[in-house]
Amino acid sequence: MEPKETSAIRKVAIFGASGNFGTPITTALACCFEVTIVTRLESGSLFPPGIPVVRAAYTVPDLTKALTGQDAVVCAVAPAGVEHQTAMIDAAEAAGVKRFIVDDFGWGPRTLTHGLPEFRESLQKRYIGWAHAAKCAEANPNFTWTGITSGNPIDWARTYPRPDSILQLIDNAY
Image (tube, rainbow, N blue to C red):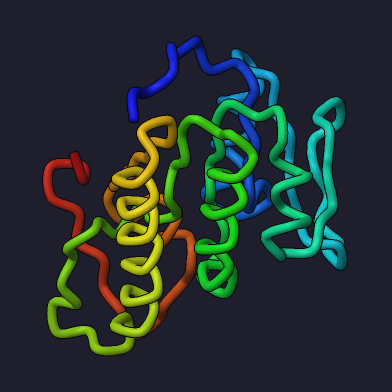
């Protein structure tokens, strides 16, 4: 099957818009794209004014309806929401979304736990999203995906006081 002619991405939906990664991503996207925030029905989060908010059950039919007309989706949900990413990907593909950015900021597709077994379960859930997006893109040439690994958010993490820890920055952390 040949991919259809591609056009510019203008309309971008974001999941996790109120989170630690989602808030700055939403702000950055809003300057240049038509952004829509997609959130859970029961979410009590506050969102920036002027950006449309669609509340939906995290089921493929409801998410497909919410994502219809979007060109791209950015998934920046917190670890507790990552388990819904497969439904988000399936809905995006069904809605005709061209590009899906998987939730993986700070981790990477092959990150080892580096002796931190407490991260193993979270990483395994994230890998499911990478693998599912790749499988969908392989089967559907009109659907593409991207994984962005930005590295762990040191500036954000160091705002949490830990009296029993020492943070040593080398070369101003750059």
